[in-house]
Image (cartoon, rainbow, N blue to C red; front, side, top):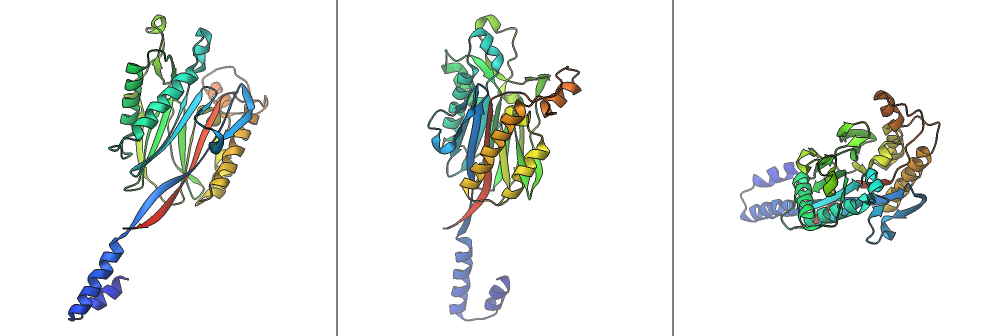
Length: 313
């Protein structure tokens, strides 16, 4: 294509010059528009048989004490998960409400015209501060993980606080992953609004402590975002095997099928007393006598494939 332009430029005819300019103008008018093809699946540890797909979720956006959101604007696509900390149940507090409220604020702020996906950590900071200031009846705590695709340059920006997380796969291999944040074994970093009597003796981290990363994405990459109910029960090698055939997949039905299979697998392994789960291995590494077996937990995952649509400008 460049050779053809050079050949035309040797000619002195005004008509050819006009043709050359039109050719270059036409080439500039094609814009690549990256987007995510998404599937959501999850289950509650209290009712592991019942699962829901994205098309049937309505506005619940909850699996047990987990919650999630999806946002899509001309500038960015944002997906997020939050895992309500179950320890508050002893005080009659449903951390699932906390997690859902946090994800609702994140979703609303992701829709702002000025948000272009570059700073999901600031999105988390703004959303938590707004929730803390305006929601007097919301108590509890949760982890949070947000990933945002900035469409302008097809870059993934992330913010993770706690032990939910993400994987990015390219050609069947993990090329980027989140790091967990813990105060101690099974005690993740968490955003919290504790009741008055627990304000000084509970973990309450700040959203600015979230780990932030970025990486350029390519067409065909896979992004897996999930709460620890998935990662504590399914080894990464097993996740990679299930996701390995999806590189470049553009049919949401196939993504949904694999998302369904992963949640079923995580559920099955969480109740298997003989399986050497990632959670059991971490317990052993921390000198905790957990033995073998998985960890029954709520599970939420969002599976996304990066696609590029070419738009004529």
